[in-house]
Image 1: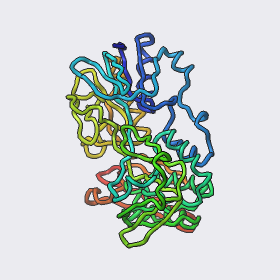
Image 2: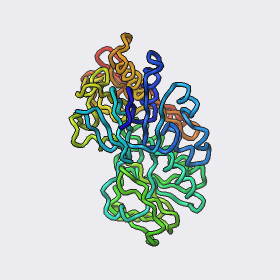
Image 3: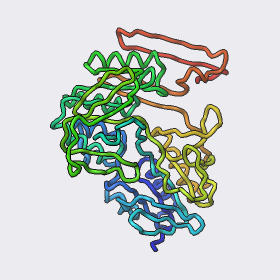
Image 4: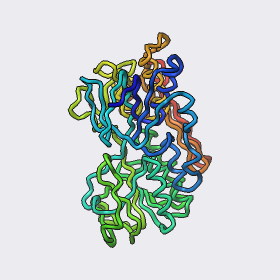
Length: 395
């Protein structure tokens, strides 16, 4: 059994932020970072640019081998967690390796959620969460003229834009009344939808997919199951396309189907462990779980919400960095640590040369009584500004 003082599971922003905090005060103790990804660390935010070919995998690394060597970090890729034995401070990896730790950070990120659509699991489709996903999708574009993007969240919208830039005709299907729900209000979303439509994207907003099918099923040896612990996700090398059926009865055919219907924390390895979970891993203001010497940060952490004092998932990069920083400080008992103040929704979204930013509450259904609204709109100039003030503060 291998041993390490600090064990960090994950390799994105939260994990790297914690690593930096640890090495600020403890330069020499053994530190191991393990990740199920086969690659050096990268940010998921760059994946759409890999799809379009605007960037390359080797150009978007967050850290390189030299960084890990300089900071005395044992970096192990292709090694996802399989189980946690908290009583014995031990984890088992998917390849059977066992690691004993003194202090453990869980920063294993999120995985795509696949909707339960009849026929979907027998249809070839793509997801976009890892670098391999992006590389596979980019490689497929050589033979793709049309694509259906299922889901109008940030991932789906970014992917759709980059597919357009790669010369693909795109249809976006979003079952809710607007794109980017939870990020922008409906009026702002309508401006964004119009920009996409004017560029040539077919927008099917408020439509629900009730079925999916392969237009021509090819031999099983042409399909590769690369989903791993994310479930059954098929990447097909050669296909005549996919077809989706909407609740309106309309059928939409395309060369490529991309499913971007959300993500969920990757915490299957905690099954049977004493670590408390809800939607994610429950943590306190210092990112500690209910189990001694185990912390969590990033997409897996269900932490304090700044607005209501409840615990919720954040899923945004600034929160991941801050949570990782605090977790790392807690792991080394840094006296300068300050409690996590709570997540504040913060999203920046650049699209076709435009910029949209949302900070704070975007759901008007949760606004307190007496909220003041300042609204300025000029759709011709693509200008939209909305400020909400309640209880004497910006919301």
